[in-house]
Image (cartoon, rainbow, N blue to C red; front, top):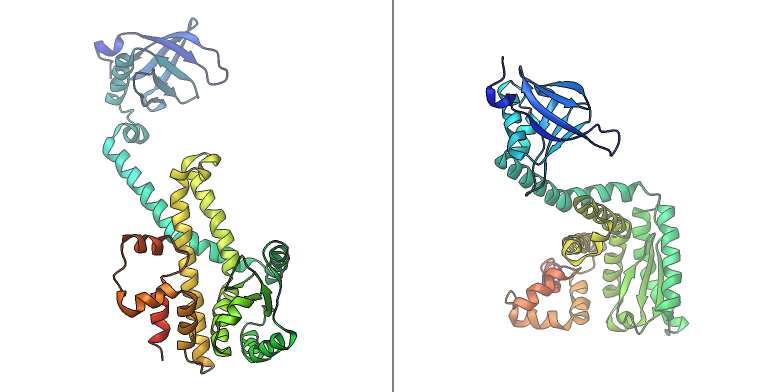
Length: 359
């Protein structure tokens, strides 16, 4: 096929060979369906499928990308587009070039990328973190837990002010439940500790590997040992589901996702880009709390302990939930709904209701 008269017109520009930053003057035209370049007295020829028109951004120069890595740059945007059309007419319109200039395809790709990213964060990250966390040996978790306990003792906790007799009484009361859970999950070494802490207040938490910590204030809040056993079962649920390791892995994966999407390591700490990761992580933690509640509920049934025991101590731990249970259930204002959304725990009234309806 011979070239049309318009494609025989020369287009001037600069030629980059792809091997150095230097450039040479060049002029180009289409002859017999191929791109012909004249550079430094030499002629180069490229078949139509070896040439791709680059996407122009604003008023910047336009480019023809060549198969050997060379580039033709020109201010004559119209001229390069004319050459490109002549090559397309010769059968050189590649799928990539069609994709780059097709607005519908670009928008479809953007939607697909966004959908894939959202699904990856909502479902892919939790699934992958679960696989990774369970691949770690329990011994590693135990080591991390011991170091965490030591650090918290140095920073926020002091030795328990409970008498030795009271501590022994509690350990004796909790031992049957600890042995039962230890028997079901022998890989974990479950140990109960008592600490005083003004910073933590009435609290109970599980550290990686099996260290379970009750503050003196939490012990004082309980009206009977079965309430403490219910709380302990919830914390053991965190241990056996390896929530500490999963949370660590999930946070790392979320940072990796944000860096991959933005291409900037520093973007992970920016508010605009970091907020989605923060909200996703809060959602993961709420799911973990629900898993721990499920574990506690199953254990209480197995040990013939009334699930109401967990609800009772939770109501005392969160007096606001008691007010909502008494008359404002389901009528949270906007601030309350936002607080629930941003919380790492499921809403307390919902958790309490689950245990109350199981009696």
